[in-house]
Image (cartoon, rainbow, N blue to C red):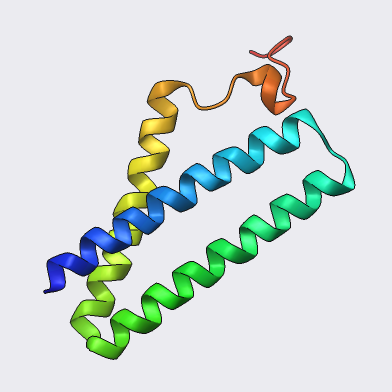
Length: 102
């Protein structure tokens, strides 16, 4: 049963990572009030989703809560690794310039 919480935590972390990537791309293209509102809404929804996951897992027991947390942690590092290998967002989409970089 604890392995299920590991998988659920990993899935939530991957969804969070993809949502953050989408927010970064959105902010890179458009920095209007509407974009900021979407970014804030996404952050609040991510926090609520993680809080619900951990609360439900902890109601089952400390082991399940720790497995859900481990799934979140592993999933977050997995999505960071995957995005760094796939290039994530192009520099131009993030509004970054590589000119003059060492």
